Image (cartoon, helix red, strand yellow):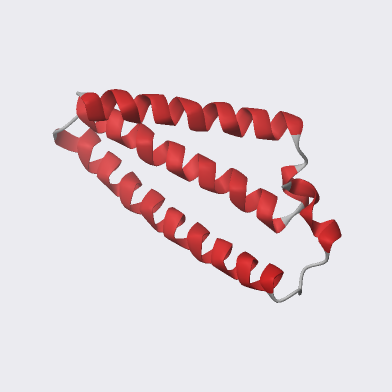
Length: 103
């Protein structure tokens, strides 16, 4: 039960972050900003899955939820690869400082 409660809290915090970041920052203007927004959404979806699967552990709904989990897991992996590429570009000086507006 602790896992479900903490996952629910985590999903809520991710949702609050996504809403606040959308309202307060021009995240869509930079690759890093778009990645940050997508990553928060993906982690929030993964945590929400943990809550949802607790309510529907069997049957067709559970099968659909498990498929969604695989998709969200793949998204998290791809977003981390994108972050690595962004990091390497920044460390090598290939990204102008003005591109950091959405962060």
